[in-house]
Length: 124
Image 1 (tube, rainbow, N blue to C red):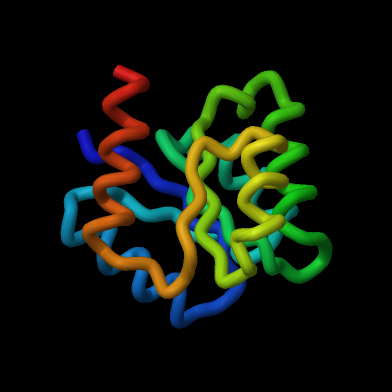
Image 2: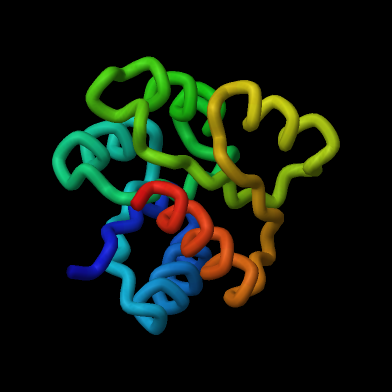
């Protein structure tokens, strides 16, 4: 069975790039364009990993991360932040909020897949 990866990103070009990388590596991508949709899709699909952009409409990714980690049904899902934001402050804050990894856009396919594999390997 393919691992389900929820990609939370409002930019269609990012979605196409990330979903292409995921499909090529035998993962099943699911898309959410904002925080509300992210929480709904996470509850519905129970993904194995969430890739979360921090720059989202209607509330930033930190709010989404906080809500995911505060929900007992979703809190165990590992979150990898994938963002164009400066890692200086954003990475530390993301980790404090519960992110397991932090990747900077534009993301390299091999780095993304290695991070996902590392996360999934620690779950099994």
